[in-house]
Image (cartoon, rainbow, N blue to C red):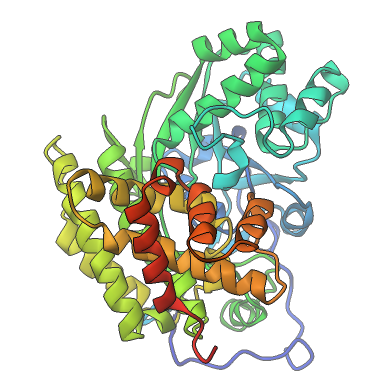
Length: 486
């Protein structure tokens, strides 16, 4: 059921002042549980606003239940389990909010429950594994290859060597452990669908999973290559963190208490490329698009949407802003985004020649409207996390292409410069930058001048860090992003 509410309807009320209301459940909002045929790793707000929403709206949704596993903490699973997997998607547009109960998640499980994960992935009925484990969780080195020295990988390999008693801690380790059980059970092939913001994300997932398996059990790795399909996707729906006010707005509009609502923009997009050997939901009924070559769509989204987000996250915070909408209203930030977009668009044109109808000018206009939606409080601190991983995909390809074409690449370099200035500012204030390479960032920031910039740039791209002209360009631009009032 979807409930509409105008943008200026009633203000949220406090828990104490609110009348007692029942908690959301399948008793309160009857919804049959579909059989588990999808296992998801990375239960969070985005999965619930995107893949779970698409599954709810597939024409054959009654056949496709999702068992969703958390990552680092069990909290989301515990909260959602208390509501039989039900939650509300609050679609927040300029005209107001709509509220929809989503029932496609039929199990919410602590990611540390290796036994349940293994049992489900080993089950013959399971056909799809979807992933939203964040860009940094794949354990690949700067060269894009599996890195045995990556954080958590060595410990996982030790746990995997313990066989059925092993308890890997990383999502990739847990998936490899469960796939070994599927092989042993003779349950056949399935599809792994990567939904993280990575270029060629299906290949990234394959490299990580096969690499982990190869390091543990080469026979398992060979079976994975033969039986597991890795599907690439481009996912898009702005989904900020849920606030207490959002919980109250659901209570006021819907007449029930939901401990796990998700707020999202009206826009949504999902492009997929790859095989589903054991079947899949009819996601196209909900608007998903299936293509042969996903790279142009990936790059359009990674460079234009995600790239602009990263630029605004670092430049915006340095200029005193808290949200995307606030940062975009700053002429300095807007101009930086437009310059980067011009470079990105120039390098997307060639991709469009392969038959992809990218409609970049219209996409840019649409992004500006989405970013200016002040009713979606997309916080810059959330976007700024794990910058070294994100910028390798959002800024480095565009800067490299510009330099290879004999151009300065100042627009893409400005994104890196904003990140450099952000890192220097944070470490100078005694704060740790939340990043998988935080130790390297701290060590680089202890240097001075061009050496500091070069060391930070090397964390993103060694070839670019060895180009003196690029180092000079980034160093000069970083000065323009010094914290306001510093």
